[in-house]
Image (tube, rainbow, N blue to C red):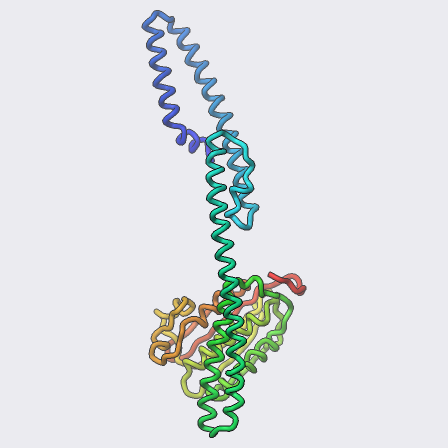
Length: 338
């Protein structure tokens, strides 16, 4: 707060004091008070008023700095009113009491929302575990049917399982900090695990995968990065052309490590590219082919932001798409829970 802002806030009071002073001065002048005496009184009044304003301004600024420090030191900002020292004027104390009442209401609302979120997450996790059993059983049954039918059923089961997994990760993404375990990991192993999980989908779709220079070390959460890679692989397969080739390549960029996933698929138009990470956005390709929810890339971007890794897409319609994952540099390889 500047002194100019302080004066502007007290402008009405200052104007009233000036008007009253002028009126008193005129009255004294009319009643025969000497001009010199009036001048001395005016100078004295200005000095006293200036000192009072300066002291009040310095006190208000110190108080504001104290409140700002309290706010900046809080992770949960809605607890601000509970942490403010109860000093100041009567008006300030009354205002603080109202703020505390509002804060308590907010805390109750946050607690209720967190409880509902936990209940929702537990329900989804339980539902996912329950539904995986019949999916696995159906996969085993498919081994005994006609090969042509088996291939079609296996593909449908893979899509169902992908949707189920996406639902699980969506529920976990509501509070991802509880699941993040950041540690030292090898990109080659992460990519290999993601490819293995989607081996059936890649083989049935006739996708050729090439990996280049994946012997790089990063510091991240393996399971979440695997999920992000899985969404990118599923998208590449869904919007493929004939003889799809996926090139997965890593490289150093200063102290950072970049992982690129490039395909020669359908590509994305320039006006749709900025929206592909938006929630529920499917684009013209998704609407034309059907079966797209617009949630996969949205979740990928959300988790990437939580992990503080970059996720960027470049594409040319009819030529293919390249997605770049940028892992930040870290000083230590110690395992860390976020």
